[in-house]
Length: 377
Image 1 (cartoon, helix red, strand yellow):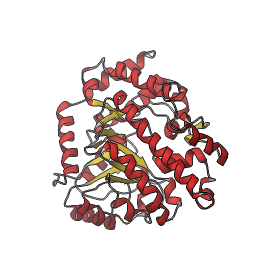
Image 2 (cartoon, helix red, strand yellow; image 1 turned 30 degrees about the vertical axis):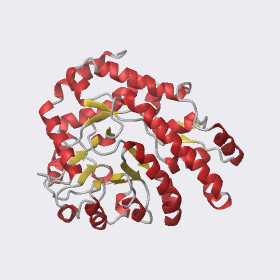
Image 3 (tube, helix red, strand yellow; image 1 turned 90 degrees about the vertical axis):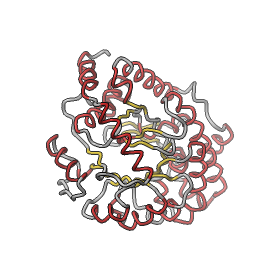
Image 4 (cartoon, one colour; image 1 turned 30 degrees about the horizontal axis):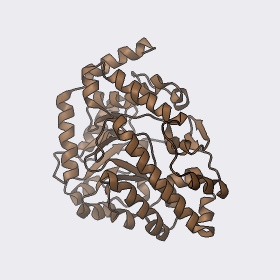
């Protein structure tokens, strides 16, 4: 490590990790996914972790050591609180990892992290279709991802507990329709009506690329094809990937069911499924999502746009896990509906703690199934 303070932080973190707690948390996630009744409501609690090195997105974007340390700050928070997360890191470059393969420029900032500019040129889209799946090995951005993976495994390997208990998550690969929107740009929403076949063809290419890129990175992440450790310390017991469907919330339910869902099912298939996330109001998508082959867990980026109890009633018979980060007033009723399983609370946004003591109090209250007050914006 270039910075001696980073080495000292890693030594301290290695000592903090409790193998007995990790083993118990592994067992908890297994039971959560198996639909077995749990001894308490699992909770992953955000923590400011002021005493661990952490850097802004732009500062760490081209500095692999800072990127690595910032990712490990979440491991430090989990080891400090002994909440219900498992430990993972990932190469954190935002949503642009696959768009960069196609030569789409990225805008990088602390406020918006990374975002693709979008081509908004249908002839350019046709040229991408003609070229097919891009080369991974020769791509500059992919080399940045590989540098992180190699650096991380080398540094973790110096420590007994970090090397055993910190896993690596795949780089952010979004999902077939999100990728289509990132690369194509806003014009895709007009093309859905003007040139539906071109949109379908492009979504097929995105699905193929999504599958190929995730397959390519599985060995570098040292995880099996059909399970994974994912962001927020979540373990995918069944299924190896995540699909993000933020952009699909802007489309109607018919388009989602007829065009997006089949691509998602095909993307899930080689990995035996995984979990699905979206931000926004996706109530019109939910009927197709809960019946989608491969969806084993679900997370809403804007959960309070959804009816928690109704969602629990839909998911429980299908044994779909819900990662819930919204309002907690109805949590006791939700736990009853789910049979005290299949539900994990993520304390973030308005429930994020202000300090370590507040985090521990919130964690214990939620584990006991009691609502907690929201923080001020």
